[in-house]
Amino acid sequence: MTDEMDLKALIGLKKKRAVIKAALTHLRTFVANFDAREQALSLLEFRQENLPAINKKFDDIQSQIELLMSDDTDEAEAERDKFENDYFSIRSQIQELINQEKSHSTTGLAHSSFTAAHNIQRAQLAPIPFSKFNGNIQDWSSFFDIFKAMVHKEESYSPAQKLFYLMSCLEGQL
Image (cartoon, rainbow, N blue to C red):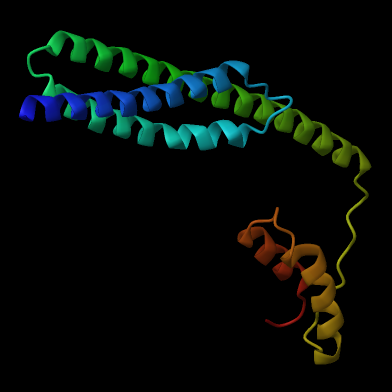
């Protein structure tokens, strides 16, 4: 009776394994047909995140099959080897595509940033001179509004540069 139950369990496990292998094959087809010009890169990234779950499911089921097929280890090892080779091959292909697309977009951004910086540099006007603040409280509000807009909120200046600009705008006793 147990042999018959083991056989039924083995058949059921092999069917489950086939479903998991089909999911990997489906993923391989998706990767082979992926076109970054028409599809979002995040589609690859999401599928890449799903790969370890597919591998875990296969490993769980394959381990159960191997326990039931203790007399035929060659077949079980061959199944495991083939799946693992396919799994890592697909995972590698996905990572290569992601790296390739990210390097293309980074290169494009670097080029556009360089072009934009170059254009901004050509279009810059002479610096606007700051009025000096001499400690008169009535002048503070207008001085600080100008200073805040032109220096304090400018993210490209370091805190030290901002302090230097502020110090250079002060006159009188400190």
